[in-house]
Length: 196
Image (tube, rainbow, N blue to C red; front, top):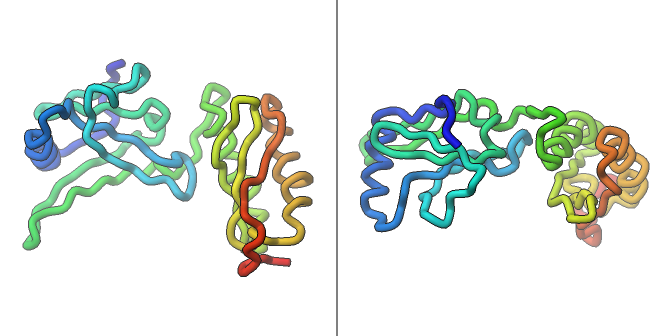
């Protein structure tokens, strides 16, 4: 799928990436994606894109010297993103700035993972932060359960079961009725940071 460019790759970055790609026998271009988009842990990544790496739903963005494939789920978070390359005494540095990577951007059409992260990021974690805790999404199972991991003051906390059922699960099910429930995969035997 081709789109109007949303990601900017500067001329210097294109030259640098084209040089790297030229050393790879089977690279078609680069693949740009964001791990944990819309969360505080969002990380923008660039990798070589080979034949088997291109997904049907990827967005192809051609540039003068290279081609980029954007992970479809990452597209809303790559708006206004910039890839640049600058030389310095040590050689040079490739930088990626994606100002919207950590911004929750969801609609009713967004993937369920993005909608769960939105609720966790904006409603659940601010409450848990008062106790030094946080919760993150690990995965959504085929049977519609959100698998979560607690961290900080929530890990090992004696009140975590109550927090999970009465707080997190209730909040998620109220807003995302297609979920059947939540599961906790945290190792709560480590009580070193526990709030209670």
